[in-house]
Each structure stands twice: as C-alpha cells, then as structure tokens.
Length: 86
Image (cartoon, rainbow, N blue to C red; front, side, top):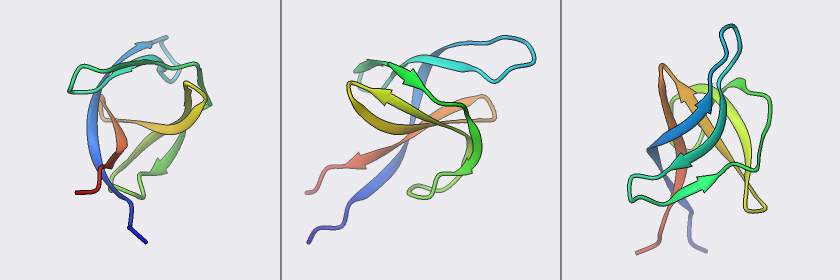
C-alpha cells in the first residue's frame, strides 16, 4: 500500500476582506495556473496543517464536490497538495 505524500503549496487567492472579520476566500490559483472557484467555505478556525507543517486560519472548503483545507497564515495562503507517486 502506497503512502500518500503531501507538500505545502502557496496559492494566490481572491478573497473578500471586511474590516474586523476573517477573509472570505472565493477562488484560488495554483502556481501552474490552474484556478478553482470555491463553492463553499466554512468558518475558519486556528489549526495546524498536520500533513505539511505550519498553522494558521484553516478553512474547510468545497470545490467541485470535493472537500479540502485552505490555510491563511501571516498574509499568505497555502494548501496541502497531494504529491503524485513516482
């Protein structure tokens, strides 16, 4: 059985920023240019990125019927991206 591996991937995010509130992510773009609309974003909570290290505001987001996590930490956004097996 192959072990799944992940890497921390920094992404560009379009988000709504309202003073006094947490950012609300709407869309993110991977470094290779692929872009995804966020269909639904849950309320963020401080949490660790257990698969890649680090922490920040963790959003559970729904994209094309799949659920994943998007993190916001010190002004940068990242995801735990699955690494393809060699």
